[in-house]
Image (cartoon, rainbow over all chains, first blue to last red; front, side, top):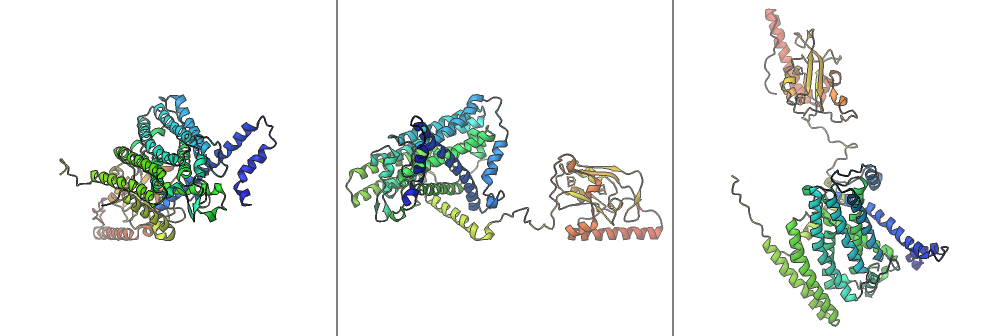
Amino acid sequence: MIDALDQIFVAAKHRLMEPVPSRWQPLVSALLSIVPLLMVFPGLFALTTLLERKGLGRIQNRHGPNRVGPWGVLQPVADGLKTLTKENVVPRGAAPFIHFLAPVVLVIVSFLVYAVLPLGRNMVAVDLDAGVLFFFAVGTAAELAVFMAGWASRNKYSLLGAMRAIAQMISYEIPLILSAVTVVMVTGSLSTVRIVEAQAEYTGWIPHWFVMQPWGLAGFILFLISATAESNRSPFDLPEGESEIIAGYYIEYSGFKFALFFLAEYLGLFAVSGMAITLFLGGWHAPAPWLEFIPSWACFFVKLLALIALFIWGRGTLPRFRQDQLMEFSWKFMIPMALVNLVSAALWQLMDCGPERWLVSFLLIATPYLLLGRSLFERNQFFKRTYRFAG
Amino acid sequence: MSLLGGGILKGMFETARNFFGSYVSAQRLTTVPYPEERIPAKANARQFPFLVYDGDDSQAGLRCVACQICEKECPPKCISIIKSRDKRQDYKGQSQFYPATFDIDISVCMSCQICAEVCPFEAIKMDVEYELSTPDRFGGLWLHKAQLARSSRYYRQIHPQAAADSDGFMAAESSKARARVGASAAPVGLAPQPRHAE
Ligand code: SF4
Ligand code: SF4
C-alpha cells in the first residue's frame, strides 16, 4: 500500500505505456516524463507568487492580496489573465528576432535543468552519469538569454541591468559550483541519483544527509547564498533594481513575454532549490526512519516548499546590496570560503571515522570564517560623515 | 566582536515575529480594508469645493453673489463663473447678482481651499466626499452649478465647528446691515465688511 502510493506516478506511466507499439515507446516515454514537469512546476510558480505576496505582506504587517476569490487564492489566475490580455509592445529600435527569442531561450533553459532532478524514488526524467555537470552547464545558458534580452531591447536600463546580471551571475557561479563539488568529491559520482542514494542511511533518528556534517553545512549555506544570487532574488536583485534601473534587463518586455521572464526566474529558483535538496538535504529521503511511510515525492516537495519559504523570508528581511558590496562579498568571502570548504571536505573523506575528523573539519571552516568575517567587518566600520559644503 | 551574519539572524527573527504576530494580534494590521470598512472622517477633512444654499431650493437659495473673487484667486484657475444680468435678494436683504453658470473642473482643482478662504459670502465650502470616480474623464469631472449645490444643513453636518462659526458671522453681518437700514433707511454699500480669520 505504502509502496503503491510511493510509486503511483511510475506505475501510472507504465500502465499508459503498455498499449503503445514498441516503435513509439521511446518518444511516448519521453513525453510522459516531460509533460508532468511542464504542468507541475508552472503550477508551483503560480502558488509561489501567491504565497510570496501573502508572506511578504504579513512580514510587513499587511494583509497581502485578499480580493480575488476566498482569501485571494485566485490571485494567480487574475494575474495570468491580465498578462495574457496585455498588449505586446516591441520598441522600435529593438532587434525584433532576438527580442522575441530571449524569453523563449530563458524558459527552455529553465525547464531543461529539471531533467536531472530526482523528484522521488525512480522519478527522474533522465538519469545522466554527469547529471550535476549537466545541471550547471545548462543553467549557465540563462546568462546568455539575459544578455540577449538586455542587448536586443536597445534601452540603456536594459543594458545596465544585463551587465549587472552577467557580472553577478558569473561571480556567484564559482562559489555555487565549488560548494557543489564537495558533494561530488565525497560521493565520487556526478549522477544526481547516486548522490541521493549516498544519503539514504540513518544513525538512530539522524539521517545521513550531507548538511549534517560540518563541510556539508558550510557548503549548504554557501550554496543557498549563491543560489539566491544566481536567481537574482533579493538581496541580490540588482539586475532588476526597481529603484535604480526600473526592471533591469526585462524593462522593455510587456504582456506575456514579461510573464515568461517572471516564470523563468521562479523556475530557476525551484531548480536550484531542488539541486540544494538533492546535494545536501538527502533528496527525496524522509527526515527520520519512522517517517518513511511518506511518499518520496511528497518529501521532496515539502522540502522544496520549505526552501521557498526560506527564500521568501530572506527577501522580506534583507535590503539590497550595493554593486561593489556584491562583488566584494563574492570574491573576498564566498570564493575563499568555498575553497576552504573544499579542503575540509577532502580531509573529511581521507580521515578515519571518529571525533578527530569532526574537529578538524569544523576548525578548518570556523577559523577562516571568523578571520574573514572580522576583516570584512573592520573594513566596513561606519563613521560620521562630514560634508564640506553643507552648513 | 560581532559575528558575520549575526545581523541577518537578528533581522530574520524580527520579520518572523511580524509574520506570526500579524496573525495573532489584529492591532498589527493597520490596513483598513477600504470598501467594507472606512476610517471615520476627520474634522477638517477637505476634498473639493461645493456651493452652499439656504432653504429648500438649491438654485434660488445659493449664497453665491457671483463676485468672482474665488475665480480670480483659484491658483490653477479651475473655476469659471458667468454673472447673471438681473439681481436678487441675498441673506442680508440686499440686492445682488447671482451666478448664471458656476463650473469647477475638479480634475484640475488641487483642494487648496483658497476659494473657501477668500469668499466673503460664506458661499463656497469644502466637501468631504471622495468617491467621485467616473467613466467620463472630461465631462464627468466638469461640475456645474446644479451638481455643486449642497444645503447649509449638509455643511453643518460635515463640518459642525466651522459651520457654527460661519452661521455666527452671517447672523452678525445681517443684523448689522438691518440695523443700518433701520437707522438711516438709506441703501448700504454692496461690499461687506472684511472678515477676520476664523
Ligand atoms: S480648492 Fe483651490 S484649486 Fe480647488 S477650486 Fe478652490 S481655489 Fe481652486
Ligand atoms: S467668492 Fe464666493 S460669492 Fe464670490 S463668486 Fe466665489 S463663491 Fe461666489
